[in-house]
Image 1 (cartoon, helix red, strand yellow):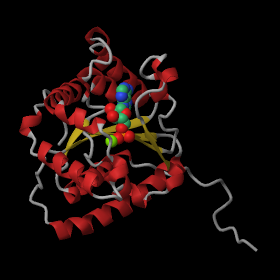
Image 2 (cartoon, helix red, strand yellow):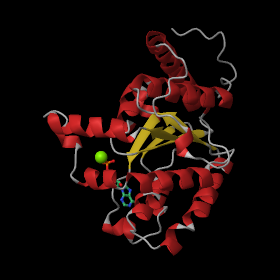
Image 3 (cartoon, protein in one colour):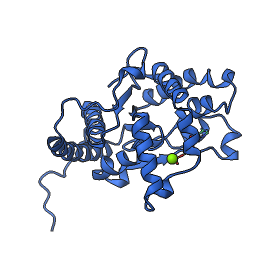
Image 4 (cartoon, helix red, strand yellow):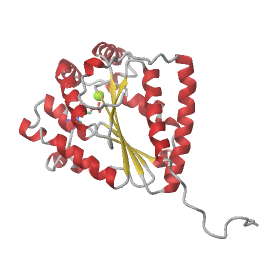
Length: 260
Ligand code: AMP
Ligand code: MG
């Protein structure tokens, strides 16, 4: 799933299930979420490094589902989720990273971006919200920005939840048909859907140009929610386990103390 070299999304099946068994996957997900919670506590106790998870997907691609179903077991005090919608007038009056940088995670924390600075080379490119001379330079700016975060102690994991156009149609239709979910649907979602091929090209380019050894992209198969959830949990667990966070040593003289 890790993107190395040129990415062609045609090579990635959104319906992939890696031969996993659905029932077993549920147990594995619970195990991974438990391990993630423990690792998060250690990261917090260590207090010297942070983790940034970037979530990108087409509409109905499962970003909110991942937040609900994978991050559910973590301590909310240690996790900050930031959603990036269309920029405000004030945000537009600044460089594209200005609004992003304020929300990068502090030491000991996990930050999750629900959409991100990548919108500035995705929707902005596809809908021509900025000229090509502007967005083309952003890939390099993004690489350098992320490298700076990495150099200062942030581990970055970027996840593209890859759904098929057919799956998106079904999910958008469900949103329209069910009163409980209708609030999630905006008419503009249909405009974006019309532009599907252009978005896939923009995603392919963005992931190719910005997947680096220190801030890799992963293409997560998104059509089956249980596969998506387990894949995300596995990637995060692996990433945190590799960090191997260590709580600081206790103060001298604590061992053996009796509390009366
Ligand atoms: P949602 O995530 O469904 O709440 O929708 C947020 C909307 O904000 C999406 O349509 C995004 O394309 C849009 N958006 C996010 N970032 C930007 C950006 N930098 N420029 C323009 N539109 C954006
Ligand atoms: Mg939406």
